[in-house]
Length: 451
Image (cartoon, rainbow, N blue to C red; front, side, top):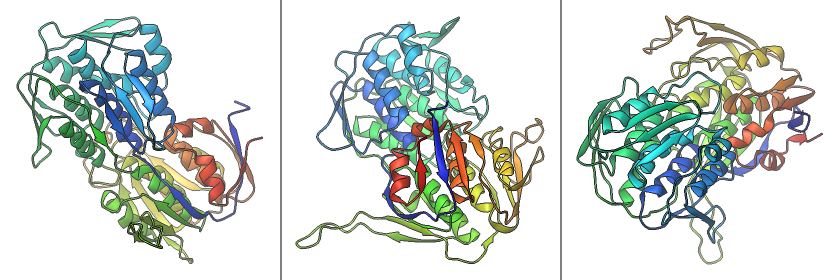
């Protein structure tokens, strides 16, 4: 723990330009999809983050040859020799990731069996895998619980099915897609997640030869095919990272240009950002031509001066306000005049990070009540899932311990916005989802250092 710490000298506005690469919530799933092809796949703009390392290791254990391409951030996957991996090896690689559950469908198609270890990930709620297992059983898989994890097999193959999710879970939707594309017959998934990362995964599978129809009202229809080939794909940029840097610009009264950020996937965030009082400008890509090197497009975010406005917001599945956006933004809301209200409807335990903000001088109260009108699963289950933020509050330095990925970046933003020197412990967890964040902080003029 003494080495996993960042010393942050706060009080300096972030100023400058950084770039985001492929979305964390898409890239790892695209890597798993390569298992389904009978020829190599090529993925561009892959960020250097811990989750990518985990999936790369798991693919290697299962016989997929993963190599770096000619372009920075390019990976090539050769699935010609897919094989079984030992449970011990899988456990070693998968301890910090929930990705192994998504290997099940592809491995059942390729090998006829799969193994799921105890799943890791961020501690923001139980996030049960019941949806995943029920979907796999619907396809014809059998699930055997053993002390080391779950062993799955498909003695009669996998077959298309009709399945309705009780909640539009992103992970369960990905599970169904990765399993249905080669299942015999037609699969109809109702109440599916339709996040941009889901649509991009569908684009990848379609490139591989899948037949997938996205209907209205969260209905996805997949016609199984007997074989798939490899893909070549450049993923959508990471809208979570882009919003995190936007919130950091607002909280520190700075000005940050996020190259690669795309307006279409961030519309809901941009509306709230402007309502709070932040300003932004969308810059288009300018292709190179004679005498002009061109310029990658993105979005510039800045604090225009003056006071910020309190807002009321509720997280929700797409196209609602993304749950991963609320934690970084709440830090900025501590600087807004009045009472802001946040109703978290996606994860039941995602407001624990506010205790650290209160320690730094924020005034945040959390409640079990639903402080909003969006239908919510948690209101009668004794979870503190609503927050009232009173501001503006002057933040001061503190020693902070990061509990999970998004809360970790929020703590980092708070330390950057606070007066004085903070020590942020557990910062290596941020590497799970934010590529080279320390170098980016340096590019933005932040005063941070390892002790």
